[in-house]
Image 1 (tube, one colour):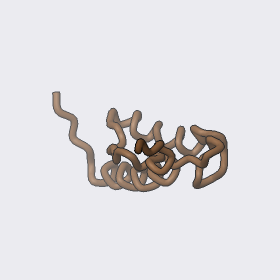
Image 2 (cartoon, one colour; image 1 turned 180 degrees about the vertical axis):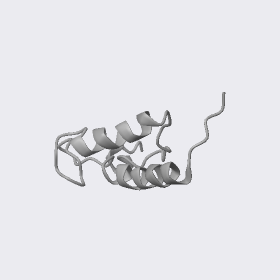
Image 3 (cartoon, helix red, strand yellow; image 1 turned 120 degrees about the vertical axis):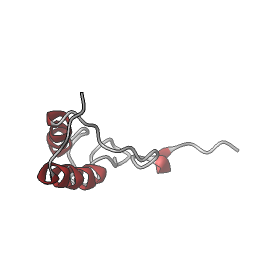
Image 4 (cartoon, one colour; image 1 turned 60 degrees about the horizontal axis):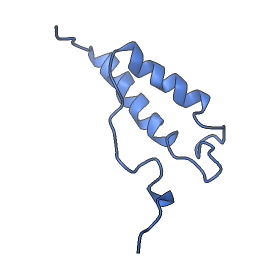
Length: 74
């Protein structure tokens, strides 16, 4: 069965997508780079709930959460 989302819901999900991207990045100490809370931060959990409410997932951007921490192999 297909589910259709209204324009208002699509706007809410788009805004949640933008904001969750900010709360995915972590510092080297494992804290949210946006708000400084230990990961996963409260805001990230709230935003994840928005997606769960409508049965969708945030769009993935591989490497966005911490590609700068990856060890380089020589």
